Image (cartoon, rainbow over all chains, first blue to last red; front, top):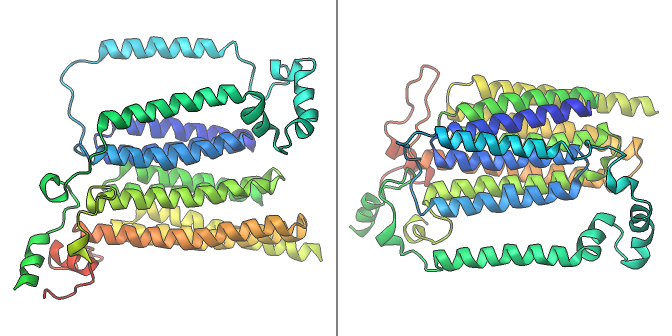
Length: 201
Length: 93
Length: 127
C-alpha cells in the first residue's frame, strides 16, 4: 500500500509538471505550482521525511505562491508565444537531466540500511544517544540541523537572506500608485465608474 | 478500512487533478486545487492510521491552513490584481 | 465492546469515502463552475466530517490517546472553517468577474454580467 501511494503521488507530480509546462495561462501555472508543492510534500510525508514536508508545504505551497502572485501583478497573465525554435534548449535540458539521473545512481537506495549514514561506526549512535544530553532537543533531526551542523545551516540562511535582499533592492520597495498604474486589461476589473457616478449624483 | 479510504482518496485525487488540468476557467482550476488540498489533508490523516503511526497529524493541520491561505491569496489577487495596495478599498466597501 | 467501535468507525469512514468519491465524480462531470463548486463542497465538508469522525473513534478507543483524538478534532475544526470560506470566496470572486450561473438548459439565470457583479457586492438593485 505504501509503495502504491508513493507511486501514485509521484505520477501526480509528473502530470502536474507537464500541465504547468503546457499551459499558457500564467495564473493557472502559479495555481498548479502550489498544487505541485502540496503533492510533493504529501510524498515526503509518505516517505517519513516529516520535517522536509513541513518546509515544502510552508515554502512551496505557501510563500512561493504568494511571491509568484506578487510578481504576476507586475506583468500580464498570458505567456508570450515564443518565436525561436527550442531544439537546442531541449538538447541541453535532456543532457543535463541524463547527467543528473546518472549522478543519482551512486546514491544509496531509498530506505537502504547500507547507506553511509547507517553504516558509519559511531556517528549515528552518537547522534541518537547523546543528542538529548548534549543539545537538549528531543527531535534528533532538529538538533543535527540546528546545532551539530549549525554553521552550515547559518551559511544557508545567509545565502537565502542575501538573495532576498538583492531581489528586494532590484525590485525596489516603491508602492504602486493605485489609480495611475492599475493595468487596464485585468480580468478581475470592476466596473467602478458607473457606480461612482450613481453615488455622486 | 484505511486501505479502502486511501484508495478512495487517491481515485478522487486523480479525478480532481483532471479538473485542475482541463480547466476551462481559472476558477475551475482553483476549485480543483482547493479540493485537492483538502483531500491531501485527509490522505495524510488516514495514512497515519494506515501505517499505525497517527502522530503526524500536525502536518495535516498545517496543510489545511496553507491550502486555505493559498486559495484566498489567489482569489484576492484575481479580484484586485494586487496583493495589498488597497487600490479598491474606498469605493468597494 | 471493541467490535462496536470498529463497526462504527468502519461505517463512518466508508460513508466518508462514498461522499469523497461522489464529489470527485461530480467535479469532473458537472457542466459549469457553480455546479462543480457544489460537488466539491460535498467532498470538503461531508467527506471530511465522516472520515475524521471515524479516525476520532479509532484514535480514542483503539490507540487510547486523547492527544491524537484532539488533533483529529482540531484538523476537522479547521477544515470545517476554511473550506466553506474558500468555496464562498471562490463563488463571490467568480460572480464579481461576471460569470453568470446557468440553469439546467444552459440558459443564463441573470440578465447580464453586471447583475452578477452587483449581486456579489450585495447591491441587488442599481441605486
